[in-house]
Length: 250
Length: 74
Picture 1 (cartoon, each protein chain N blue to C red):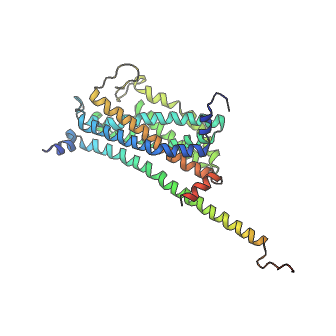
Picture 2: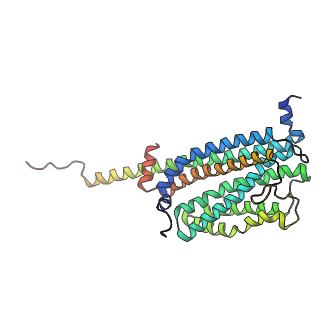
Picture 3: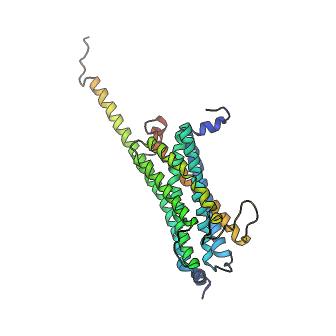
């Protein structure tokens, strides 16, 4: 391993260390997710004023947009972990990539369903084959493809490598989702929140949206940690540190 | 109309807003329950494997040592 990687990072990559690290952090991630979630929901559903064009229907934004961001963010994490897994054959990276896929699929599914429920009253249709919606649907199929390929192999690690390859190829879809509203004419509205440059959304609506965004990020961390811990136990079944855990948690 | 009713009515969009929130929570709850069940199953399988290993070791030890060792002559 290259010497520029700090020792602690190298250690963190070892399954028993990461198992303990994730176990310590997980309850905090879950608590932060609940805290920011509750504040965000109260701000979004109760405190924020109705939209001057969309009335109260716009309140779907507080779950739709954070979920949509997560669908792309998790794909990015999965793609990076998949790359590390293929190049350096690090077991932990494989596990992170493969366990990110179901969470990403869940957020993508939420994005599509809530978007549909928002589209019906605003656009008059549940679904349209435009660039943004179609590329998000492709994102869901990519996640499902990664999950399916992973489970199609008898050998877990061989399956992880094949699925990691698909995950890396699929990264091309993430910028397409993001820029689709600029590149093509679409029913979907353009972005109202911008990382660089001014956002066209009032503060009373923006802060609950940011709270929900943080809540979904922390939720992802909590869910990922739980899944990775279980996977590490299953993969390292014969080793001493796993035996101790299996015996102590009888 | 009470303020709670006004809140639940969502300005006439209740049929769209509340199902959206219901889907959000239902999917995330399913996402947190599934790994919990899997963790329990993995731990159960690990313990079963440990039990099998220890009985195999005991059997191996017993076959090596005869059940009625001949007493050494005085």
